[in-house]
Image (tube, rainbow, N blue to C red; front, side):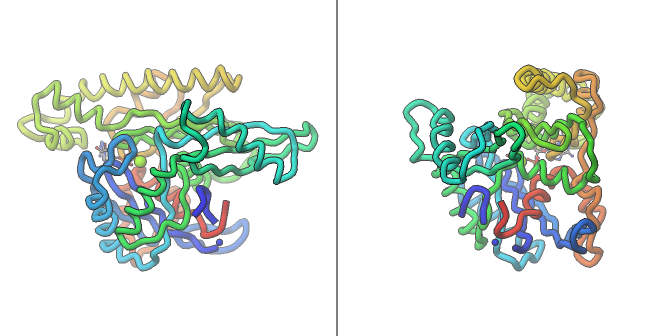
Length: 360
Ligand SMILES: Nc1ncnc2c1ncn2[C@@H]1O[C@H](COP(=O)(O)OP(=O)(O)OP(=O)(O)O)[C@@H](O)[C@H]1O
Ligand SMILES: [Mg+2]
């Protein structure tokens, strides 16, 4: 099991989030340039609070039971799944190396990776993988993406999936899955657009920035939708369960969504601050002075008014991402209304379901 994985058949995409487990199965239809995907299975199961903390599985039984539940509900027969890791123990970095042989590259990558790790933590505690993104013969150099993930984190995710009766064949990274889900829903072209993909989950936000369809920047931000819920509890004295309902647009404990909207807007504003700081850092480090579009994914993209606040503050078009824009539904196994309801929360699972046994 490599970080990017290894063989050729689409896998079941299994996104293990701290708020919910999402599962997606796609079928490739057609060949070559006319290849499309059909959604076969899509499901979600909640993960109890505190079962995953800071990206670490604290309660393996609870997470395995959510995985087992969603696989059973969707009657998924295949055991081979693609999962993803994210958060603090995963590092993703693009590095430009002079053109060199594969053997030399493998050595150089190890040297480069040393600078990734916190002092005192050696390469031994990390699984390292890399992929060549682009070779430029004219400039004599190449771009390589390096990924390092703590081995104990990989092992705990793999053993939890195994406990649920499935086999993790590919381990991807949330930001790459996000990008793959975006690409499968975009029409190829020679666009030079600068697009930020923002996946806001319960505890983390994954950010990928693409320039002209090439990704150049990835970042996981410890910021998630739970902050909206916490703010409603704090401001309105409601229970966490009621706060969750209010956040999702339903009245609860005598409060209405309209009444609590200013609290959600205040938190959306702090997120806009966080996101603009990261985008400013990207702009100055990569000398890119534009941002054309922000696409918002993840369950928290559904927070009422969030796209408007972000669009006002970042002065750029902000839309919710539809991971099924160019994906058709199998009408025997997928209820379109339910799939639309899950919508942007399924983005990472869709990206994972595109992975095949054997690709890099
Ligand atoms: N309709 C809705 N309106 C607002 N927020 C919602 C809605 N539906 C789900 N959410 C929020 O989305 C979050 C879950 O999204 P998602 O499934 O993308 O997260 P996750 O992958 O489980 O979390 P993470 O990646 O941070 O570990 C929760 O905070 C939940 O409250
Ligand atoms: Mg997530």
